[in-house]
Amino acid sequence: MDQFFKFSKRRNYTQYFGIILIPFVTFLLGYTVGYEQVRQTSYGVVQQNGNFTTVPGLPNYPSNSYHNPKDVDLSLFWQVWDMLERLYIDQKKIDYTQMTYGAIRGVVESLKDPYTIYMDPKETEDFKNNLSGDLEGIGAELSVKNDHLVIVSPLKNSPAEAAGLKPGDIIYKIGEELTTNMSLSEAVGKIRGEKGSSVSLSILRGNQNEPLEFTIKRQEIKVPSVSWEMKGNDIAYISINQFGDDTTQEFSKAINEILLKKAKGVILDLRFNGGGYLDGAVDIVSEFVESGIVTSISKRENKDELAHEEQKVHGHARLAKLPLLVLVNEGSASASEIVAGAIQDYGRGKLLGQKTFGKGSVQELQPLSDGSSIRITIAKWYTPKNRSVENGGLTPDIEIMPEEDDGQNEKDTQLDKAIELLSEQIQAGS
Image (cartoon, rainbow, N blue to C red):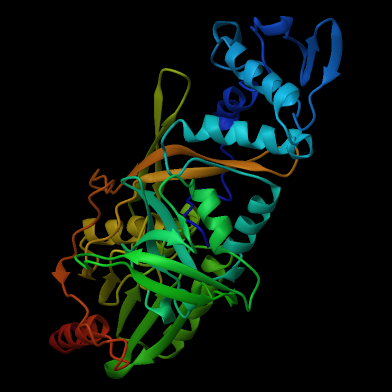
């Protein structure tokens, strides 16, 4: 998985946000152009020196955008396009579709929002497979933070986790290539690959003076969204790895089994969970909290106004009466933070572990006609007490750091402490 992407899969935001796509795409089509009398005559069609031609790779989009395209001077863009066609030495490399994709990426990346990203058809398909839990690669959530390519979290039981990659690691080089000027999509494309192949990463970590070198064999990764087991003292331990397509269904099944086991307490593990669908986060909170707001969302109503929407709990809250502890760390992001923030705000359970990543925005996937897509930041979200986690994260109620030798000794200091504290709470309440 390349990045944590958070959007609603059930709620249709197209009526609110679909037209935001138009400036990104129509920017490329050209309306007011002074160079060689190039002008827009119909969608995707230009007139150049009196001849009409369809620009390859440009899909047709309506022109009813917020911004009046006549105010945008695109002459420089078309000058460059024309110069490449006329002067570039290797004409075999002139690929109109790839040029169009590159131009769209440039427009999107000009926003300097690491979560708003253009994906070509192959990247779009890979992304959809990621959220279904199927992918080939090293299994790490990536983002851009402070202009660095950062590992948000390695997926559980992934090659990235087995190799020892950690949240907050900065990917300095992929193979022999510096990541300094790479877009997130470029970096992901270089790290991904067929199972059995390997990728070399140079990592900057904390106060280490020298880069750490990792060679990781890519694998086919099947990520179960939810897993659970009974621990001592009748404690149900539930781990959510991501909020994907099957999370709600898998979590509901786990609850039915946990209730049959007559669990007396629950540990919810959101560590290394980079997020996923917003709806899934609402569904999870709804099993622990009987009433109230899960999160409030601020989004665009129109060009100049913001609208506010509340996502409320629903369902039967089957685990509402059981003592609860939630495990979090710096790899817990977005949808994970929505769940943890709501539970913390309501005092429903305590957070144990480390400060979370800090991502307070929501993304929507908007498909384009050729199979490519744009992930757009369409909203900001807040906890029930109107807190934003953006850049700050959630501070745990009980801060417990993992020990350095946890992995080597197959220990889990944070989980062990959670079991100890929850056992005491259960004993005190009995």
